[in-house]
Length: 241
Image (cartoon, rainbow, N blue to C red; front, side, top):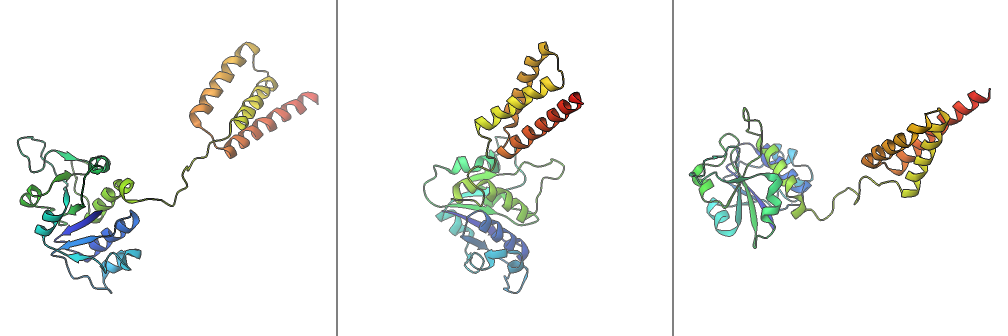
């Protein structure tokens, strides 16, 4: 169970945005510490998308102490201290590494986000178990609260999402016979354009390597094969004329 907590949010819209991101990435329990008023006709519900039907209405108002006492906590912060002598913000993991680091945690987990302007205080960070920070430009590393939550929750999807809208394989590779058919048509094309016989072996090898790296789909393979065939046939007709 991975929950999300928002501490002292200033704007209802950010709470709604976080609820929507939770819905996108398979989380359901939203905990609010000192939240703003969440009017069902206001911007929180307006920004929440389908999360207005379940996550927002079921959000629980809790204290910071309750979060610390009942969850393995992940503190999200924009700024870290790279000095190992300071243990409040160091060491920090990144969202990309977070899922792996939580894989073996026993018990419930809570990802904690702070205030829009100042984030979590050092005192709050010191009470949480793990520090997570999003790598960003050193000149402007502070993200909008809703954006930051979306990035972190996206990276946790391996732990929270059983099935996505995507098929198991987005890129269906062409079958081997289809690829070999393309190579055969390329060979005939080389002959039709009069490519020097002593160089054809090198051309075939280069084409095979390029195609191997490209990993074409069946439709791409069929299209390329058709183009080479049409070009060869035009050349052959021109020679006959």
